[in-house]
Amino acid sequence: MNTLYVIGNGFDRHHGVPSSCADFGAFLKARDPRTYDLLGEYFNTDDEFWWHFEARLAHFDAAALVENASSFLAPYGADDWKDSAHHDYQFELDSVVEALSRDLKSRFATWIRQLEVPGPVTIPSRLLRLDASATFLSFNYTRSLQTLYGVRPSQVLHIHGSADDVDGDLILGHGWNPKERGSSNDGNNLEETGTREVEGNRIIDRYFERTFKPTDRIIAAHQSFFEGLRGTQQILVMGHSMTDVDFPYFKEIIRHIDVNSVRWRVSYYSADEAPKFRQQLEERGGVSARLVELAKLAEW
Image (tube, rainbow, N blue to C red):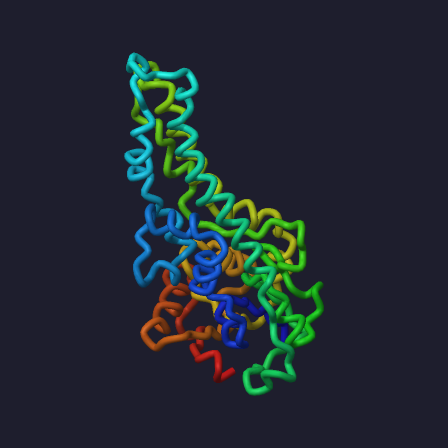
């Protein structure tokens, strides 16, 4: 049977890999306390923050940053004005934006690459029934499929990058397209707005551009993989939460299969989230609920 596995972070966590975003938060706090503190200052880091980390990156409190940096907007005619202060406001904004975009992603990549995947001998009770000859679409960055189940690398598409590629970019981000968001300068009369404020708004825009996950571009780059899914007979989703930011990938999968016959088996973590997966596939993907089976990952 032609089988596609869709692998999410719950798969790695099931096998004992400390790969949750909360684990990343602890790593970040220890390695880069400034960036960690900036997250607390410019995001609502409530109990749900790390569970919805990527989506929450879209909720950057840019207004608070502008207000905090406004102390660097000294009037040009002030008695203590210095020409060197012309870029202080932009520098302050840029310092925070760099930390919450480039530095954050860099720390994330460092964290991912130091995660250790256990060997199959050490966790025999956690191993699942898995067809190692199938096709795999992995949203994880680790080599858990290869290490634990002997899956050949050629059978796995790491859609957001692989930890094994030390020079590659690991993709992380929210789904709020900067084109839909618009510019922070929209609505301003640029001729009447000060140069420093205009440049500062462009720096704010840069944050949203850098932290956006370009799913359309990623899908286009891997179109041959998706086209190769024609003939798929079953899809097994293991440990993936089908978040909004990643659902375009599922829609692309559905576009290349026989939606009326392919059977799905989707794992869930808690009973209250189980119906959501069936509803997502039916309402957003056109997959009949009768074709979707739900099961705890440990039961596979």
